[in-house]
Image (cartoon, rainbow, N blue to C red; front, side, top):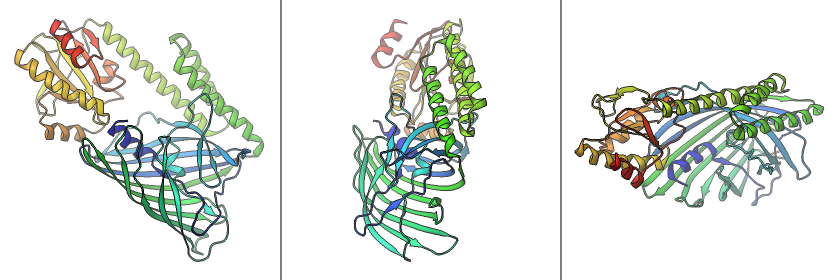
Length: 459
């Protein structure tokens, strides 16, 4: 797993889930009940300092429904999360498609999470902001209860590691709430094929409503360190979550809700394997589903599924059209080196486009390979190269280009993924290489390294 992916996974997925205390045993449990629908709003603030730096804030809304308790003692959970707002490097990133994520999992009364074991991968990452709180002790609390416990740290990647925590459970007697406070250190977390992550410090404060036993407000702060071949990363993450709404569905509606979620997930699976002819028929079924689903978040998520899938269909159509057209889509702009670039070029010659972003490490490596190729070809003046940066904020790529002294002309594709150069070319992923001949026609995609050099030498 590469560095960028690991940081992103820690950012989205880091959560703290407690088990039964050891030093002074206290029975812990959630106030979950069948038919309960909870709506949480979470703000996640992230600061990364290191070879790749970032300062960002995300606001996430998560809603879930608790089904009947299973024989295993775990509560089946059905829900959805959506990204409401994202600010990156001081710039608000437009969210034109809600991008809701549906998921299924179960949680025990002690806070242990389990993914649903089905043929489809139904466990997403969106659930973590709303379940990063530990459960409340069952019994009435004295003014202060202090205990030490080994608690699992779950990072959303299928692995966990124990850390030693000190917990303080406090019955405030005010505002009908109890407060659970935790702080501690964690051993080094080693994920497969990735540098070790050291959680140097983590603290929590969770306010519970006494009657409902539900967390009304929670706050988690984490300080992490990651040593990698690129250098040391220091990561500060703060997660603030607030319960916005708590409803109860009648118990007799739960079987229908479960069936509707199963139907929705089945539609998602069908769309991944459907051909062009079947796609529109399935989408019409999803539209009909969105009008009759018994709970709001399923209706909204179904509508999002249609929007996103049709958007991807446009992406695919753009790619086919660009490949078949006599001339590749034109574009222009001012590079990060403050030079004007227009394509097609005035002097007709083959051109290589590299679509890249810093959040994916292989794309960064492809940038340096293109830099080497550009310097070689610039001397010969027979082939041109242009980089297209797809990071969400221009400052991220700009800072990197300036510090690394990259000479390859690099444009920031401001509209991606809603519009822009990558959209016109049908670029779904980074790195993507597009080769255009001197007549302006696309003649190759997705070739890199020595294969690209050999191909260009033949031109």
